[in-house]
Image (cartoon, rainbow, N blue to C red; front, side):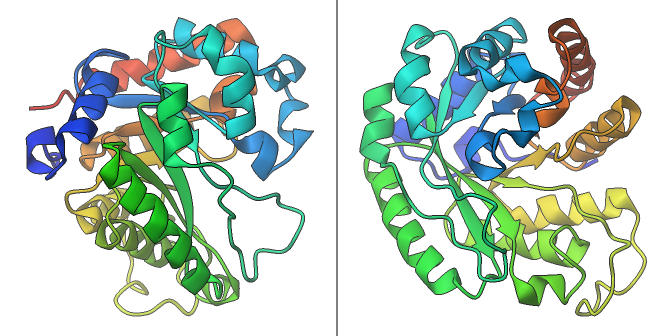
Length: 297
C-alpha cells in the first residue's frame, strides 16, 4: 500500500495550502481524503447524461445532494456557478472549471477552450479551479499555452489547480486508447511535470496493450497499474474518476484500489447522480467506508 504525500510536502504557497486544508479537513470525512461531485457533464456530454435521472438536470438538486452526502466539493462550470452556487456558498467548497468543450466534434485534435478565469473563481468563493488538459492531442501546443496562463494565475492568487488529465487524439487511439495504462500513466506524469496540484485521471486498463510502447505491452494487474499512475504523479495528489456508470461492486473495487495506491480520493459524478436520491446517498456511504480507512498521516 502506497502513502500519499502530506500537504506540507507539496511546496504549496499559503493561499493554496489554506484552501486545500479547508477542502480536506473542514469538509467530507475531515481526514485528508476527498470525495468530489463533478457536474461539468452538461457541457461535456450534453443533456443525454441526465436521462437516467431527469431531476439531476437541475443544478440546485446536485448542490443539495453534495451537501447531504457531505462531499468535499462540487465542480461546476462558470454559468451554473454564477446562477446556483451563491445559494450554498460557504456550505460546500466549489471547484470552478475554467475550460470545457462539447462532444459534438471528434476528439482527433481535441482542445478544451478557456471560458473562465482564476479571478472569477476568487470572486465566486471557490476553493480550487479545474482545467482539462488533453494529453497527446495534436492541439497540445495551444493547450499547453493556455494552461500556462491559468497555472500562473492560480499560483499568483493562491488557488489550488486541479487538472483533468485526459489522453485524447488520434495518436492516443492508435496506442492502446485513452484509458490504457500507457496513456493514463503518461497523463498523470504530464500533469505533475506541468505544475498541477491535484490530477484527475481515469482508472487505467492494463489489458489495453495494442501498439503501446514498452514496457506497457507487458501484463500488469489493475492494482499494479493504478499504483504506477499514482507513482508517476509524484507530489501531485491523485483523484480517480468514476467514468460511466457501472455496477456498485465494480465501483467499490475501483475505489479500494485507488486508495490503496495512495490516491487522494475519488471524483464520482454519473455513478452518483444517475440514480435516485436515496440510492445515491447509500452508494456514497459505501464509498465513505472505504475512504475512512485511508486517513492522511
